[in-house]
Image (cartoon, rainbow, N blue to C red; front, side, top):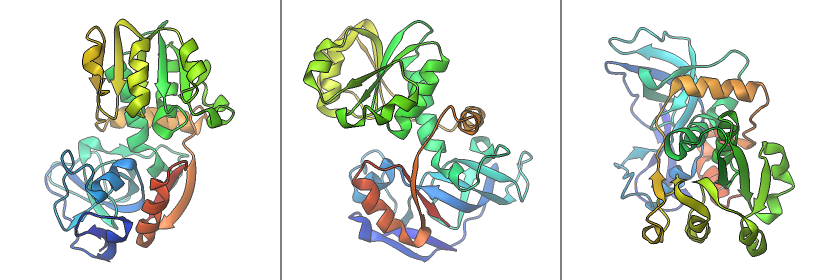
Length: 302
């Protein structure tokens, strides 16, 4: 098969489109002909070596988490999928024509959902949903601030929090406030505006997708006994706020919830913007563009 292979850490040019051995499904696994993968921040952090402590790459290695595609074969014991089934999930080594996923992590593609565009969803919608339900543990009637709310993970978090009955404050850049009016939050706040931050009252929870100095400033806005949930790790000053529960999270596949949120996409209750689609061979170009930020999802077509 053809795949995008990484032989050493470095810039986008280190991604090489070349021949690689076909994977074979083991017990409980499914072989998938990849239709599309998408580029996520974890991909370029793994490529550069920035994430090597948490996600080391075994060279030569294939990056990629999201995938949509068609089942080619199944391993021993798999009864829920058959060749020809259209599927999507997040797994590993998806920058390739063929990949393997655990059957228990795999979801059938809902009717009406585009097979290619489905690749934009799995990791970001799972992360946003679990940031709210598993980390922030938001309850009906509570107020939550979601940072980076205009991003793909943030949009998913806003939807999940609203479905839970929470009052949602969407934290975005000042330049994004107009565009963010469509994401469904109850209130918008510019996180890069000191005056707006000063006027922000206490909240029950914060769901953070940006980290850094913004996260450090916002910790003081959580009520005593509240929760600061994060997909980017604890703020550097977390120890100065002992009454606040710090809840870092890393998403895990949840096929049932993935299908549920896909239905929200089909009903236009959630929009994950797609900026462009590139052939798999142009993965390096996709990485270079994605790292600059400010884009919708970039899909790689296998």
